Image (cartoon, rainbow, N blue to C red):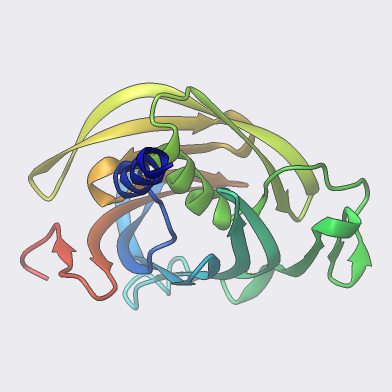
Length: 243
């Protein structure tokens, strides 16, 4: 009996435990155009986690010099929990403005146990399937957490909720890629989701956080590059020492 108890204690100590960890991440925001790629602003991500609950936020906006040519802003908030290593959103809200006009402004409440969700107060078409449930923001968090648990997995599948409804999406590993940010080489895993027009580069060094996000929203093609990452209560990792 003592042998089994000792073995159980050892396994508890050596087996990886991936609890949610709070962090802040700052990105440079670029726009890809026919004339080239231009840095137009910034984007900030923040994860506030306590036990298995989380609040995940993102804010992106163009800089003052670009507002006259292209005024863009987007804020998102996702609230949810991690249960048995699976992420479940409970609430998501987004507000996106382009040139002073609202492009997206909606909120989603998720009722996973009752197998439905509401979009701006109205029930979604279709039902929620068993398993994880994420939104357009928390899918980044779900990928990071799942990569920690299953670094050799090649396809990750999630129910993703957005303005078009809830649909399962495949995120496929496209191999390893070394990218350079501010003269620093970073080993990454490239992941593609063609249906969402999304490409991600995840870095183990930063807890499998995407260090490069390539996203097409309608006619807009955005690129976000990480320049600062700080784990809460730990020393921050700066990619650009001049900031």
